[in-house]
Image (cartoon, rainbow, N blue to C red; front, top):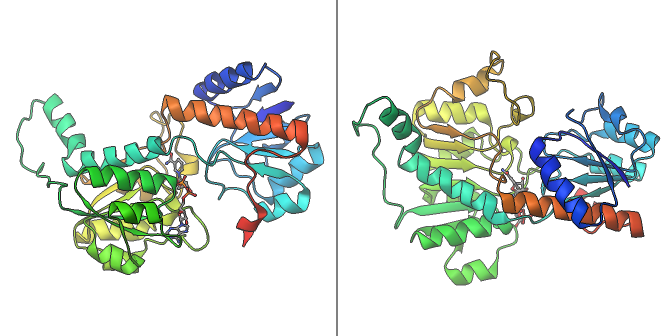
Length: 336
Ligand code: NAI
């Protein structure tokens, strides 16, 4: 099948070519550097399937262009699908497939890397030592042992974070509409969001972005948090109201903030903009805080995850070509 691959980076090419070769090289993969938008959707002309990533915007206009061009499958190289207008896809007969589980540990371990780095101020220590400054003032951390970690969303990634933090002898609280009995058996305690926020030294977000979780962490939620607590978001940017987080940092309500995602990341992340003037004043403000650590949506970025993403994506496309059904279709029930 001819596949138009949007937002293609050299690493996408490397892993997708390998997975396609392992599957007999049956698909023709056309790599496009462009991000998917209503304007660029036309580049998929002639393709039977489109492959897109997290900051590609598969809105109704883009999907209409696909449908008119004969595209029947949108194969996401991601777990999240908040960037797809599912109602439009269903109306237009475009099947949406995703990669539901590719190394949850990749994201969970990055989350823990952020917790450790922020707590022990590794980002500051690294810069200081290189400048010949070996003073410790301002680098004071805390023992993780015995601290409370609140996990919002205990699906694959949140569960992996819970297991790691239990290994640090943390008390693990969680909130999820569907509590996981296996985690409860390990000692995880489920609570409401306000109770979790009030009791946690570290809050980490692992729920999907939906209308219900948009700005889940807003000014009111920040007021519920323990003063000076750490907040980590490696899920989707818009789960946190960035302006409220900045206000929380300024007042000291939030003591440490780790972000791998940002609500307006689409214009920034995955690109080298080091030669340009940063136009996003909210993001620029975030970067001024010594107690904020930002990574550019790299939590998934391990060899194991990229291999799994590529293999599942190729399997989705192959199954769709052979049977008209992808292996991991985004269920239309999720529309509810
Ligand atoms: P999952 O589907 O296995 O788990 C999501 C969990 O969130 C489910 O247990 C669900 O019941 C729960 N949930 C839904 N609404 C909730 C709410 N209002 N409050 C609390 N929990 C709620 O998904 P998985 O694989 O664990 O991924 C989680 C999210 O992580 C994805 O939706 C995606 O946005 C993000 N992600 C980020 C990556 C990165 O590189 N930074 C990479 C992969 C995923």
